[in-house]
Image (tube, rainbow, N blue to C red; front, side, top):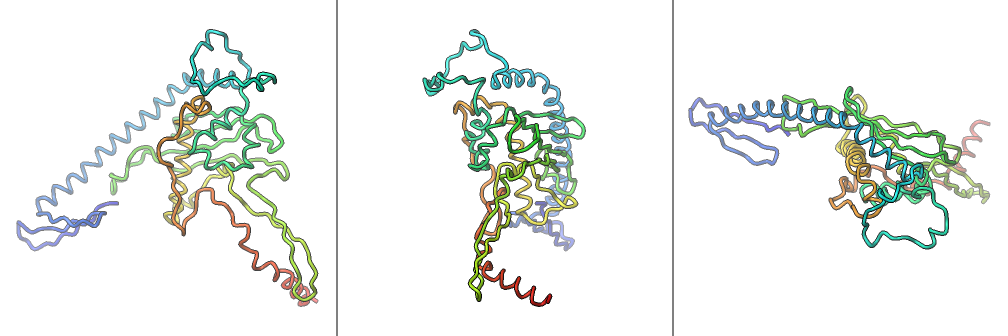
Length: 336
C-alpha cells in the first residue's frame, strides 16, 4: 500500500511532518527529510523498471531453453508410456530401499509405469488437496503433463494429455496463463516480479453422466395435506480437480473483493507450481523422494470466505422441500 504523507505546513524550517505508513506507524520528519523520502520513493521506480526487465529476460531465457528440456521430457514420457525400453546402461542407478520389486506385479504384464501422473499428483500435498476420490479414476488416464512457453504475448500453457477414455472426448486439456510486467509509477513497491493477468482453460466435452463436477441429488417430497410422496432430482455443483480448467475470471479486470483476488492468486500459484516444480521433478514425486515441505500456498479463508474449490452443501434446501409441492399446487390452481 502506498504511504500517505500528511504535510503540516507552517513555514518553519524545522517543522515536523507526520508520515502515516501502512502499518499505522506515525513518523515525524523534517521538511528536508520529507523531500528525501519523496526522492527515494521516486527513485524506486527506476529499480522496479530494471527488475521488470530482469524478469522479462528471465522469461525469454526459459523460452530459449524450452527445446532442450523437451528432449528430456519426451524421453521420460516414452519410458513412462512403455514406448521406449531403457537399456541396461540407462538403468544402472542405485535407488533407495523403499523402492523395490513386487512379486505380485511381476506376475502381470505392465507396459511402462501404471498411474504415474496420478501418483505424482497424490504425492504432492499442494496438488492433492484439490483431488477428490471421484477424480482419481479419471486421472488414471492422464499420460503426460507438459509446459509450452510463449514470448509474445508473454504467457505459458499447461497441457494435460489423456488417453482415450469413457469420461470426455478431449485428447488434451489446457490451461494458459497470460503474464504482465507492468510497473505502476504510483505504487512501484507493489512490483515483485511477473504478475498473473488472466488465464484461459479448455472446455471439457464430458460424456453424459461422467462430469465429476455435477452430482444429481434425488429427494422425496411429501405433500402436507394429501400425504402423497414424489421424488424430485436436481443437479448441483461439487468440488473437483477439473474445476482447474474453468478459470476464475475478472469482469473488466476488476476484482469485487479480497476473496476474489485471493482465489485468482491461488489459481495462478497452483499453475505456476505445476510448471516450476511438479513437471520438472515428477519422477521424484512419484517415488516419494520429494515432498512439499513448505506451507500450503493457499490457506483457508475465514468463515465468510470461500475456498478455491469449495464443496457444496447438499442439504441447504432441505427445509423448503415440503413446501415445493404445495407451491406447485397453488400455482396450478391459480392457472385454472
